[in-house]
Figure 1 (cartoon, rainbow, N blue to C red):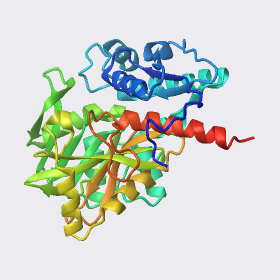
Figure 2: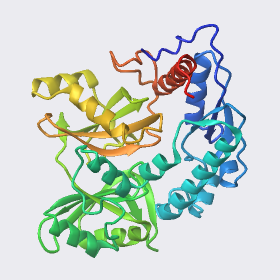
Figure 3: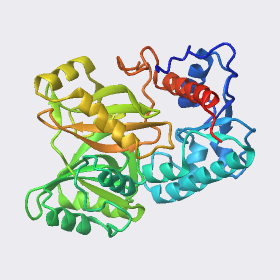
Length: 386
């Protein structure tokens, strides 16, 4: 059944919604817009600040959505213990404190009889790239090879370890990522060509004191000394290393896909293209023409249906989370697809409407989630469990 936001019958009691987020944040605003468009009362906003202080309270029967704690300087200070939110360091502390807050939210929901749309266990895996990679790999989902996959993999202590792991696994090119990073923070696309010949592409800036900052400008590091200094500074927070798979190109630009999966179904997709290895839109990436890309896949003998199926398979690894964003890497010949990452809060794609034939036509990513909640509530009333 299509999750149309207007499919709720007049006799259906409306669910009471709450969202744990940053009040006034654009994510919360877009979700509230979708809630109102569905004819529902606005969701009650529970600030992350309250959750971090252990002061979360829910009402019986509420359906609770957790959203990103980002874009709030005070929340960031509590999570990472940094005064400047553009700093890169502190992600291990962020992860420990954030997942503790998520567990606190889950306990508060359970105590009050509220229902979560995001499972704490899923979130803990989604925000650790090493754990997420192992889960996907174990489920048979195509992923880039990684020497750091899984909880049992030895920790990467610095650049010397990265060099050794890359050599041992025959990786001349690799992505080095913060295990708990997001939005390309702390990512380096590393290329090696023999002893001492190293270069990397990154958005990380290092000041004279050795502190690391996120930048909106992607830069090229051309000496091993520069690369080693950044990797060594990042290593205490935990690193994940993946083989750098050759990406598809569109008009001379690297291309990948962000696919949003709602209630198990791929509903939205955007092509991201860039002149750098990082296609993130805030780093200069731009949205490509999806229809043109799909036509190119078909012309190359690839399968768009297979691409969406891979994303749905990845989302199925997190069955207790309503919505995830899957970063999908098309091969250079457009015939194969690999999952790069799965994102817990990967739905911030303003004005993007649903894919044809996927049950979310005319709906943005937030409206599709609201519609899925309504459908879930209606199905539960029709087929209650005992």
